[in-house]
Length: 326
Image 1 (cartoon, one colour):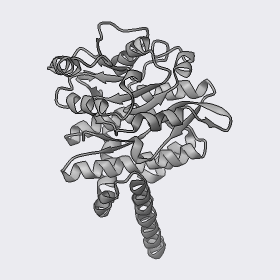
Image 2 (tube, rainbow, N blue to C red):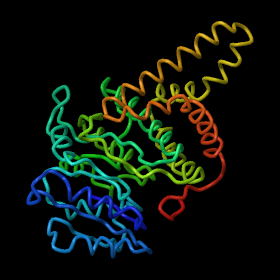
Image 3 (cartoon, rainbow, N blue to C red):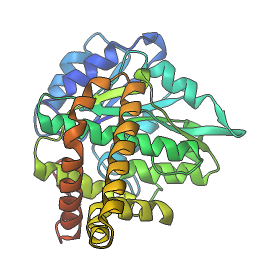
Image 4 (cartoon, helix red, strand yellow):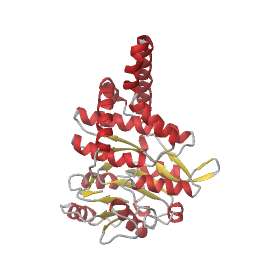
């Protein structure tokens, strides 16, 4: 399932990756939902899927129940889906060729006796700019932490750009028509599925490593992260505490340096070494170790943008997402 709204610049790359999947086409149903695009997205899709019966374009005309935006598109696609398992990606994503097999293996497994209801793959950002490389490391760090917490049995979230869903679990939630609307629709679905007593998995492996287009500007980045923050703030209290302490680390360290400079230097060194090592291991597992050369700049990026995001989140500014305000 792919939700697409004004994705003329990206949709062809996404469709080409889906066509290149190393999986029998007779067993694939690829549904693309055109969400009132005002550019040439629909025409590009129509041109690409000619003589490809496993592809289907569905033009979204109305809202279903509580669903809006991307959640509404997925609600429509779920009604048209016929497969035993569902995979979801975004129009600006290129999935790897063995994506289906790897995601299916996870969906067909169990965790502590519970069937898996929802699975998240791994995503990195492609691009030539330094800003793009640092975004990719940012994704690796965040998804690496989520993977650790997932392994500990702590439910955090799923990522809707690289996600697998068990249809039985989805239907037990009532679907997006019944799930209270959230601009973080993947987080809302994740919580609803886990509430139905299903297990979850987060994976890091080359076969589930998708490549996303980068956010082009700082302004777009801030709107993206403000949308994500609405979900992150609903995380368990101990994760919210972790995020708060992590964001305030250097400020707290500055205070500590007045009393014990040696302790401050030691903690700063330990933080940078542990963080860099963790990210390097995560990138190695995804076969993208080449990005480690940018780790020296990552902390500057991370601190700067974390505080920018915090200020922007507190501003009375609505989130722009796919040309709509929320």
